[in-house]
Image 1 (cartoon, rainbow, N blue to C red):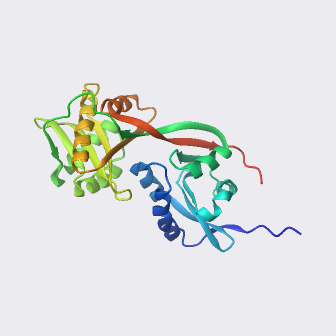
Image 2: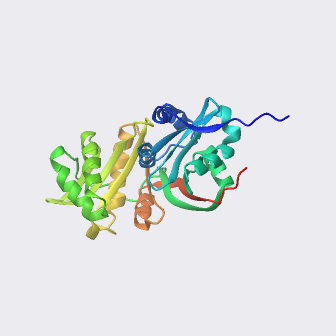
Length: 272
């Protein structure tokens, strides 16, 4: 007679299991991960995936019910699609955000997909920029906090509560670079030294609304690339697929998109 199938469950102490798997997860990627997406995953609700009494992996689901990360330990990777199907059903998730440098999750997600579309692009710096950097630039100080929040709230419309906290962290780590004309702030650049993936610099920039289209964004990125290389760091950056202006600026600064975050819609699940 066939043996009874092993019981699948979401285990206890999920946060500890998820944290324990974080380094293993990053190590098995075929390319580095965007640190913002890594942060989104770390802020989501973690789950420990159990097969019988064994920890088979971990995952996390955000407030909107999207599965942001799905990791299976090597011993159970031959059952990844089965485990993913079960997790999606158990967590009532209908959308998966999948990074193309994560082959195990990507392969299983495609097995269960009804629709796939690119959401964000992840760029690595590869060639010399088309133009010069910006000058002068200076590293932002704590006293710049409020005007940076005001600038970014107006430029990109992000919630002020988020910007207050986010920029305070960036200032503490000396990761914000300012470009000004007189007393007017024209661009804020970010050089985030990746703590989970040492050796990487994750770059970003925001340009004042009425100064866009003048090359400031690409020149800011070019300056941030030079600073990164001077520190021995490999520059990366990302943007949403629909942000055509940012994509042009990023490419002019010498970056090329080599990976994507995909939005994968789950097809109606049928019991295996």
